Image 1 (cartoon, rainbow, N blue to C red):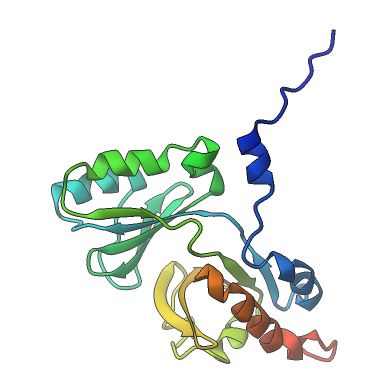
Image 2: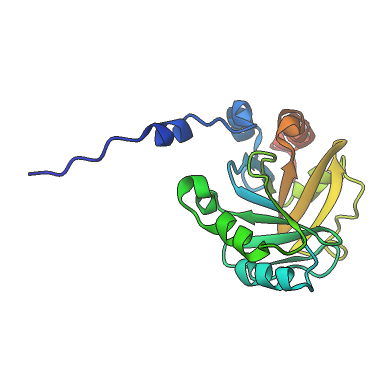
Length: 212
């Protein structure tokens, strides 16, 4: 006799009803992207954790054992596997991991971080619903960002694997260069619609087939 799937719990149904901060722009991102030139997408529901801890303290060392390290300086990114830790400031970090790492989906990352911090001096806050993630990729990605970002984004200055707090289109973001032609932007959820539309407008000139 064939097995039947267990009915979804009310909690699982609630998860399926989640709407990402830029869900209303999904079709616009698809039509506004130019394959092989510049493409924009939202990477929704990543697990994000804000950490405040001295990386050289006992608690910092325990947390580093969970995450695969804590970056030591401005722009640094540490971590292991699919978990990354971005430097935000002295003793302040942003942990970024896949959505499955969140405890609402059975992941153990948040609990492991709580246990690692223990009664040590510091703070751990679940920021997964606080921000969303935009991914901008392609040979024109840097040019799009340069229209509204004051950082020097030239690859001789901003290397792949660097993350910095800045503004893009006057919106505060964490900007992470994940590859030679790929950037991830982490705006607060309430700014996602504005920033998404700003990026689309900045990409518009590359929609012409005449662009080399």
